Image 1: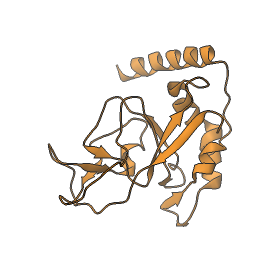
Image 2: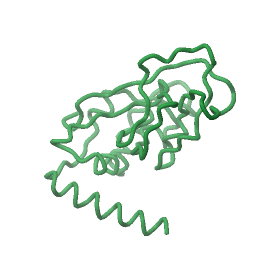
Image 3: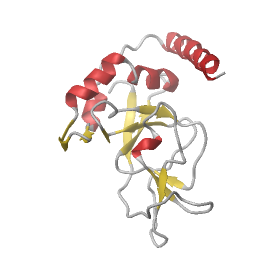
Image 4: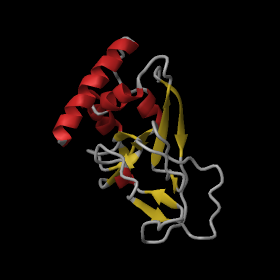
Length: 169
């Protein structure tokens, strides 16, 4: 909670059973944030007559996290690489708005992927279905995370970014 300014939530809307096409608006599925990278293609087209209004849209630098998924995958965070004006956040995906004077967003995403954070989410995940559990915004705010000095966070994030680049090659 010390690292966040706020948490924003998406909406639940009626969709078509296909991804949004060019020029259409889509709503993100949980699978868009599940696998360690943001996957904008994981969406469903919304009905043509729906007016999304001020529903949050993923933008470069956003930290998105699933509030609903299996016990092993709930709370999976990603960092958004680009702007996606035709995509909306669903009610199962939250946008974390970090206090950048206290935490580097790249560091925060990695800290939320740590074994301690994952265990925190698994322990708190609730719901009646084992295939779809939920965590609350309070569960996210109370995640135990080490917060070294901002300069150290940036150094750690830089090292891990380089390691990820090597791994991708």
